[in-house]
Length: 441
Image 1 (cartoon, rainbow, N blue to C red):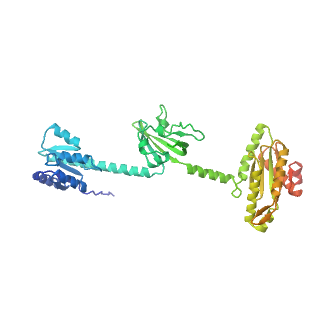
Image 2: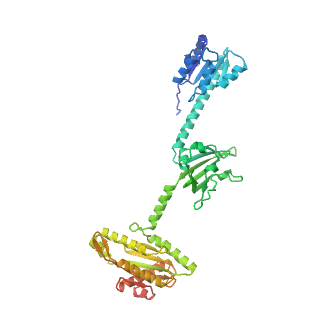
Image 3: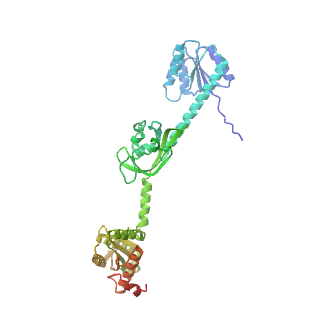
């Protein structure tokens, strides 16, 4: 199926003070199916051109008052896109020809008119005019689309100078268009890799001599703004190759601050308990092997305290889970305040916590922390006018005294904690091999 595109007849304005010439031109043009309007002088022509769109103006050079050259010059410097002007003249000197083209005429034809020549000149001029308007419209539409894009988009010419920057790019970089246009892209796009502040990364490396002429993708760079601050970006640079020659590039980038913050939040939530904000079991399972590896390398001990709260279940049963949750948060706060920055506390779940001591030099240090933990958790907690009294049973495992890996260390501390419960609660026990058989292990 073929779709026919209908277009209205091109509209032509005839400007001539000679009534006979206007009549001849009208008859000829209407015979070629053009819409025709007449003006008898330059002043009338300017009025009609200002109010009506024309595809072509056919105009005599020599007219009283405002002549054809003056009209043409006025159109040349007017705003918008004026119609093309075809000059008609009886003059046959080079000066008139030069003046016509200098004034802005696209072509010139002499009297007496050769109608077949005029026919083809008109077709060519109107077709070229329509093609130029379509290109301008397309360019304007593309620029509107690029300006509406959320990503920053910049064009770089063959001389490595910025030839285009959309609104998003200017906003992210903190520049106005006149501050970047025509400048070297290396002056504007100062980039660094994560963890560095040298801002010497070339985001269009294919401009370098001998470099492969291929696209580059940096999933994480930092761009420097005009004000000296920086922001993380995902950046792609694509070379423009014409006839096997590098003629420019397109840079497309986006600010990934929100994406990084979301990723950090996801990582935080994956490794922290939502109730107490303490590191969780997942964090403990990753951190404990690292701590053992570090202790092995430096030939030192680490201690793990496995804590299970005493008398916590009756609080939940008597006052409800809301009060129980408040108690767990108070426990977490007390444990955090007690420890040094080099040590860490995690909530494994329920009413179970662990303390990892990486800074102690002796088993006595672990015993002291255990005693201090029992002491601070024995202090009553007032929640919603309810006085809640709990305690703690603690099991202690020592690397490398009784374990060689993280799994065994956690298991031994758990066994020692159950031994403390069995012996009356509110106390601590160091792991020993005899506990395994005694606890049915």
